[in-house]
Length: 199
Image (cartoon, rainbow, N blue to C red; front, side, top):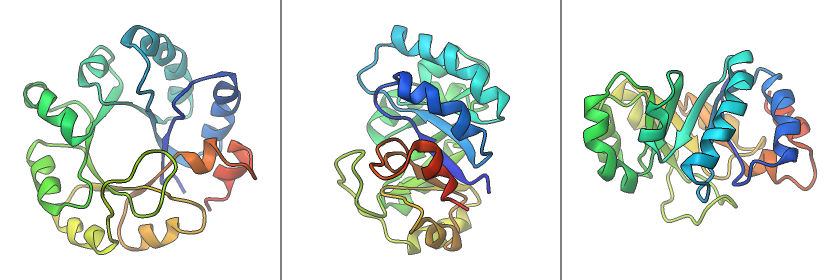
């Protein structure tokens, strides 16, 4: 099952690097998004160069959060944009449509339609469940996934995804489920144990 869109913790420390190869080695992860809001481009670039060989080894697509410009500096890296970042980067996207990228569409089918018109590689809906990763402003219902299937694009379901609720999202038509806190901040399981719970 290579259906997991794994989102990194905010800090890329020794704990993260210790588990990353083992987590990707389970062959359950399709994408790895680096979501380090407080890192400078210089700092993030150092980590990208360190992580890229690992993701390439396990055939995982590396995605940078909120920074189309930084992603453009690397050949095999994609990017992900929220709606605020999309407004800032729309012209760059239109000039570089061949780049792999996704867009957050919250709980809105109209935003997803706009994303498809921009030639996005996937759309992300959520949050579907309560999450520790970020403050939730938008709640998405599962029926939006079914409606979005008509758009003929890949769908990522995000927000509070665990081993106990991910199957429902996949049954509704999500291509991938985004996971973060359940893997990196789980008080019961190590990241490797947590990822293995997704069958």
